[in-house]
Length: 306
Image 1 (cartoon, one colour):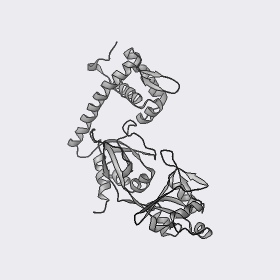
Image 2 (cartoon, rainbow, N blue to C red):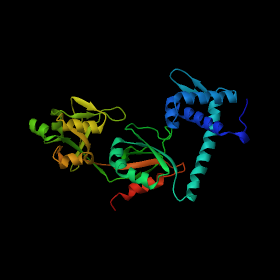
Image 3 (cartoon, rainbow, N blue to C red):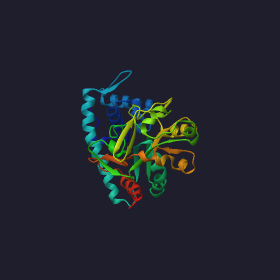
Image 4 (cartoon, rainbow, N blue to C red):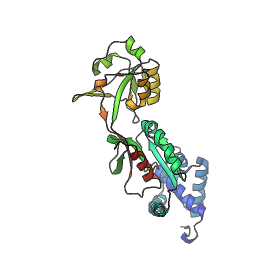
């Protein structure tokens, strides 16, 4: 089998090998192209050129799937080791820099993006102009390693095992809220069970299920499968519908603090509002921390009350 001579690898050879590795890992030309920042057609062309130079097919392609040939799987296994070593060597250079530089790819919950990143990311970007940051706002649970992310931000009770996790916020208070107009026009709500007789704005979570609202008071924990005419999969839209008098929504108190202060929304059952785990950033411990991630974590942590 023809082999690319290791002593004469060009920049294009390395780029094409990295492109192949991305497609093999994600089993998708489309997803790999997004990660690499190129078009799908350009990526497909690069892989065809690589296979032509090597003289062997690396990937089997169907209309729906992409998977490696035996030769491709063997090559990917060796390349993974090699590129991991290269990435580690480059990351280690940051110990000799005054300032980090490079690219960070982060997968972040929508609530985390709104409450943490809008507050702290501008400071980070100003302080570290040589670090570029890509933030994917996504409420789905994804494998951040296979998806090509350096780190993710999730609630503390949803962090996968075998990751390093660092707390970024205080514990979070969840509340049911509605507009005064809605509350004045409908029956009083004295207990969580009363919500079953109200129009609640249901929430479909990132894993596809409709969320059951949690309430807690003096050790009494209740989980309510609320009814509703409207179901949403995004907190901001649910809040907007509550402001439009369309029912009761459920969210982090901090997401509606301004509306509460102005009297545009009111907390339903304030004595039952549960306190849940904080936001955490998590990343694989077996990898070298990418440039800028430690500085970003430190900036978030500095905002925590002492």
